Amino acid sequence: MNKLQAFGLIVSQAVRGELSFPTSVNSALQLQLALAEPDCHIDHAIKLVLAEPLLAARTVALANSAVYSRGDAAPVTSVRAAVMRMGYRNLYALVAAMVVRQFGSKIIDPVLRQKATQLWEHTAHVAALAHVLARRVTHVDADTALFAGIVHEVGGFYLLSRADEFPGLLDDDADHWMESAEEIISREVMKKLLIPLAVSVAIEGLRDGLLSIPPDSLLDTLLLAKQLSPVPSPLQVTYVEMLTPSDSVIDFIIDNETLQSILAESNEEVRSMSAALLV
Image 1 (cartoon, rainbow, N blue to C red):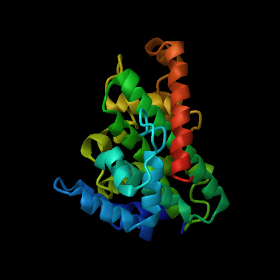
Image 2: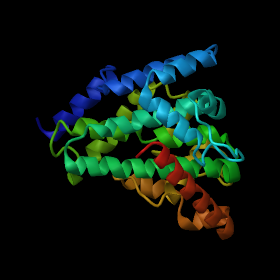
Image 3: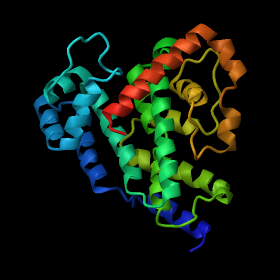
């Protein structure tokens, strides 16, 4: 099977809803469905978290991370306390982060594994930067921005996981096909993962979106975060580089002292979040 046929197969399966997820991802989806219910009782949520030991450990660790523990002197030591501190929305984001990571966990090809590792590093930086930028620059909901940053490359992770089945699929000469395939795959994976519409629209807007002046939307937050990330996406193609705001634009929007403060704060969040997720 040549590359065009392989891309065609993966895309056609995605469009039909035939998405190949690891078993752990399917378990996480069950929890997401429960958390999405408006009348989900906290005792039920805690029971679901405790049913997944890995998720339970991550929940407590992340609740004690710099992302969520500001102003709280004592660390939490139970799932109940962790869920109470984080809230359902942030628990939902944690589940999404685990889903994203699981896509790359079974990759065998060393080149693809390296790409998946770099893609997670990029994702972690974008998520943390989006969280800080939302609070201090764009003034959109910071928790939503963090969630959007975590899932904004989910299509890329899925494509990497499937590329392991087709040696050479993502070689350098595959950029044109990958660009089109990833756009479709991302849309279908986000549907499967129940990504809220406002978040999926912003993520899809990264393809050809332009930064507003002043930046005031979720899309603007993601565009700035991607530009400021010290780790680029290994799947980044030319159109993203062209449409992401330039350094001169960022200098116009954010003074240097504020920018350095934002970078320092986001670096601490990346370190803390990654440690909590045991990445």
